[in-house]
Every structure is written in C-alpha cells, then in structure tokens.
Length: 163
Length: 81
Image (cartoon, rainbow over all chains, first blue to last red; front, side, top):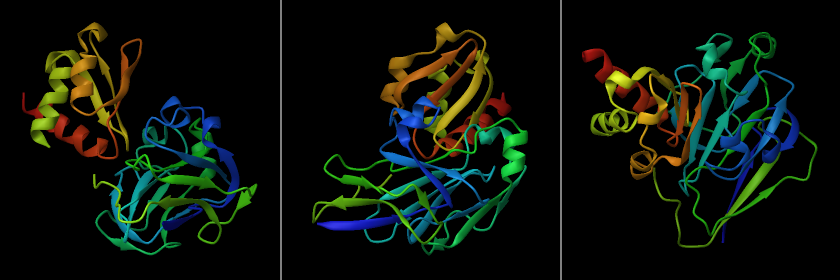
C-alpha cells in the first residue's frame, strides 16, 4: 500500500465536497475531494511534484505527485475564472517542480467577495484509479502547508493513469 | 490538441453555433446560438464527463484538467475563420 498525504493548500475551515454549490465538484464529476473556506489568501502546493496545470487566470492549479502521479487540483473560489486574474498573483508557472507547502498563488479574498463569488475552494483528485481509497481529515480547521487535509491509499504496484 | 479542439467545435454545433467559448480549469464554458445543435453523445466520445450543462444559451462541458488548453485551441481555430 502506498499512502500519500495531501496537505491543506489553504488555511481555513474544512467543508465536505458535497457542500460546494457547484454540481461539477459536489457530484464528484471530476473525482473525490474536499473543500476549504479560506481565511487567508494564500494557496500552496498540497504535494511535492510537478505543477502540471496553472490556469492563466491564476484561480486554479494542479500538482502531480512526484512518485505516484496522483494529481491534486486546487480551485480557489467558485466561478473565479470570470475575474480573469484580477485579485490573483501567480507565484509559480506550469511545468515547474514544486514542494509541498510552497506558495503557488496569492489571492485577494475581499476581491473575490466583491466580484460576487464564493471563496469556498474545492480540492479534488481527478483521474484517480477506482481502487484508491481517499480519507478526509476529521479536523474542522486546517493550516496551509502544515495539516494533512486528506490522504490517498493506492494498492501497491499501481500508478495513477497519467493524463 | 488542435484535432481535439476541432472535434469539440463540431460537437458544439460547429463554429457558426459558438458565440464565445472559454476554458476554465476543468470545463469549457461558453454561449451558443442554438443549444439544440449540441451533440451530447459526441462530447462523451471526446472524453467529456457527464452531460453538458445547458442553461439558456449558456453551456458548460466538463472535459478534465486540460480545459484551458482545449479552450484556447478552439479560440485559435474560431479566430482563423
């Protein structure tokens, strides 16, 4: 069994994925996960690996864990693509190798609210193989880059299919 | 990616049917002229997840983590016309 601990990409309260008011996330159309109501506008890498995707608007990114290939997608707020990068400061670029806890983006929580968007941020595991087991933390609050928000157990000898 | 983008344009009813399209991180979001021209089966064959979400003339298609790349490739093709 291989186990990966996924660190909280932002500080705040832990929210079940079902409570994200966006069916694509809430109905796990992309995969299992969890959400955070952030209290601070900093998003960090949840695992060490490659930053495979970082949207030009700065509101979402995915890191592929170095040894297993498991991808973790972090989406800051909902419908925040509509802000076209306003209020988001990119601190890394796609293709770069990053370390768990490394700052990837800074975002302005007040600007997200002013734009009429929810700051609730889904963290999902797309492309995860069906035999993988996902366990979400029992904690109510997490600190970015320090607390484990969920862990993934993969049967040995298997890798997540690459995208 | 260009072939995929062309296939998505076709599945959304062709270039004439697409008013605007944008790739979010996991889904294509856009506006179409006639939602009935969207071919949901074709979208599924292309790898779209679930059925397209259609609200009025607005459409969202969940395509996975490379939506932005597909979206910008679609816009490149649409601009060439």
